[in-house]
Length: 361
Ligand code: PMP
Image 1 (spheres, protein in one colour):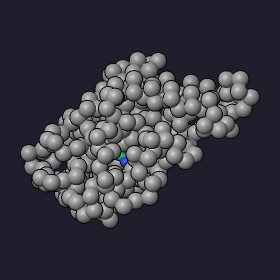
Image 2 (cartoon, protein in one colour):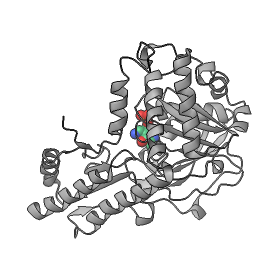
Image 3 (cartoon, helix red, strand yellow):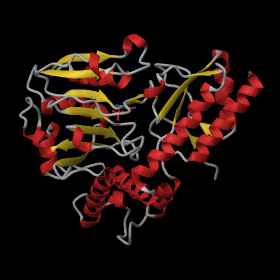
Image 4 (cartoon, helix red, strand yellow):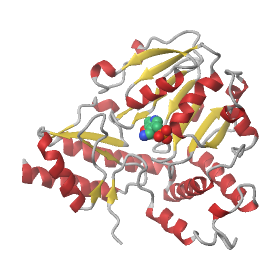
């Protein structure tokens, strides 16, 4: 068996021990005589899995009791549509701070339901920074303020929580949740697709300050209603049990590794190493994001000559380093280095990048 270091942005690498555990439990989960994925979501086995996953995530993130935690289908994009439906009155204003590609999808999903005010945008600067808080044009009567905590494609990350007064702050944490300690109480809603830092694709985590669930929102089906999902403990319909189970294994792994404080340190070291190689390359590699808001999770970079892209990817693959091709929206390269990417993987990539420059520089 040869597992490469996999820098995919999502679905992304998972801890090897989690995959091995899932493999070992595949045919017979804890003596149940069946795989967990073959058992009813309402049976005692899966209920235990589901409850432990929620409890472990609450522990990891220190989620206060006045916040509900939901495990839902629909991906992060689905939540981007449900948020205005649940938390804004028809046509009400909602403020969006646009810092990259995923902020745009959030706006696109919200537009049919709310009066989107782009309170600030980094687009004019090619999404290489985050507009200063002082320059945001927030609306007084907004239903919420939406930010993308980490832009997975553009590699731009909020390094602190913006102050937005009494208006609930809604944040897409798809690509940076559980990567460092976070004060959940500063947010109204935190949502994330699982396929980067939490586990497999097919399930999303939504953390909601409970008082917001009392908002009427707008006409919608019950299945699009967060409060209904909460009333049924995320089992309003058949949940994605396999994904929930795997995410639960990832949560246990993260706790055993030392929790988010430990991952914050590892992630700081990992990203500093890569940005150091890029910045120290004399222009051979390039990342133009403002240093203060460079993402610790997704490191996009360009080679000084486009003709080198293919040899870079081919030689990286031969060296056991895969999925480094940048998103088609941006081109170039991207190394996604979530919690499950070991420091040895990033050291291997850094070493490869230096060697590649020597050979082709
Ligand atoms: N937001 C962010 C920050 C993302 O990185 C992604 C996916 N890469 C999405 C939203 C969309 O997620 P999904 O595909 O789960 O709908």
